[in-house]
Image (cartoon, rainbow, N blue to C red):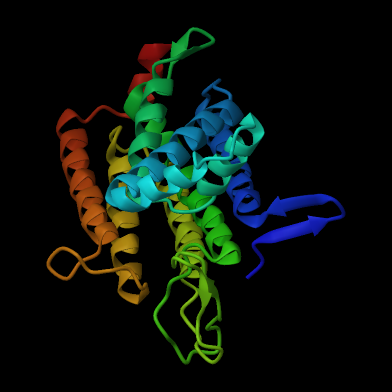
Length: 282
């Protein structure tokens, strides 16, 4: 675990560093996809806005699942004696450093991407669902890279015990108060699994994007496959089982996969192809 990198007087949180690296990876892949499909949009601005919305959505979803913890954290931020605005800002940033829910980020990111699909670039709109298709490979890659920040910071690497040679020992920062795991306990490095899964999913979606499949189908496939991946990884994570033996994330993953099935059904029924859409827009 390496929560911070210290470079002289500069301290860099690794969670934020990998979040940024995830954004860079996503922006690069989205730019490549825009070029491949003749879309004039600025990939950096599209990813930046989607990332901000995704982080806020993920944090909001997590806190709404744990209202008591949220109120306690906000009370600490506003505790008596903190009068300087920078102190309050520092407390808020500290509170915002950890505790994010994948599904909340997905919902917020999708909403913002659909909005950006309606923005005209050089007088042409990509379209809300078409923008989701274009962004799907980038979303898979960016999410996988960003998850490594959870591994380095200790916020998210809550795998069950393992005897596998790549098991890791972490300090569990999600506990209140934080305390180390037993010295001999090794757990599954689930963020690494998610990184590998994200790379494989991005490669699959990139190849699928070369085909003239109905608009919306690629996004549907992303929702289904990413949902399955998230559902499966929860079996080796130490999240509480709340609904019929499932965790919050597993329920959200099922909803994601269901939404993907419905989207594919609608896309195939409409049968609107990217080539036709681009010819109409031109």
